[in-house]
Length: 390
Image (cartoon, rainbow, N blue to C red):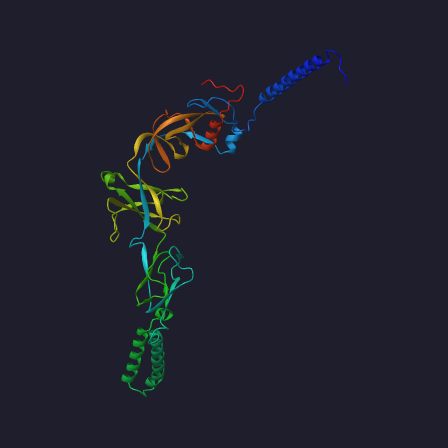
């Protein structure tokens, strides 16, 4: 196809104009898209805004705050009991445990599924003691046979004595033989059943399955779950603070659940006899009503509570946000605005922590849903027209 003179120049200019208008259209579209109103339901978008600084506002729509469980409450000012955090264990004590003994001599066979930690009821069979396979036979079977023979002889002599056919001496001898045979025979021994004397939990199996034991030998230990004893190991360096410690909070390291021993009727007691303490530690003991919440042998984190400090400022531990070794809380300014505040913390009791500086005491602090506020902070969003002058 043959082009007229100047046609190539004309097409070149036309293409350049089309490209210019094309990019102008794209730019207008981008401005329109970027200028749309952000949804209140969004926690945040990633934009190239400067990093959020401490003290700047963090926005989070009320609908989002409700969905993520964000809740604020006033800073607490009042009595606070600083605590020493130590390790502890629920231990057996003589007044809370009972031995389960073999009723007869023989070989031990535990009940199905019986092991440490098994719950048992009073009178429940823990093990069977069998003497049938032993050399010499079963002594209880011999005793039962002797009892039955003595009873039969007494039953035969009694009507003869009443008719004066036999003498009183003969009757007395038959009666005495029966009483001796009855004393020698034990129904529980004959059954071979070792039963729990209390409601509780089997905490220790003292003999192995198939092991031979003599009558009266303890084969297991059961402990009551109604009243438990906590041993807390206080390091020697805190010995001077012993007189101040009267109670404790305990935390399950697996679930994180914190229990107040004050609410469980705890009493501090003297060291029970027969329980060894660890070198370098002072053992403290507390008894408390359990109500099925804790079990024997549990290892716990223990917060030994000291004397109350009046006028202390504290917040729930859930309110703290740790970032690179520093601690912060989030103050709620209004329904959709928050502020990050650095704080210096003191001791905690497993539930609350003392605030030494950073707050005035009149703030509303986020205590639930802190993670959601922190995510909103990281998103660095400031909706158009959003401004607070406080």
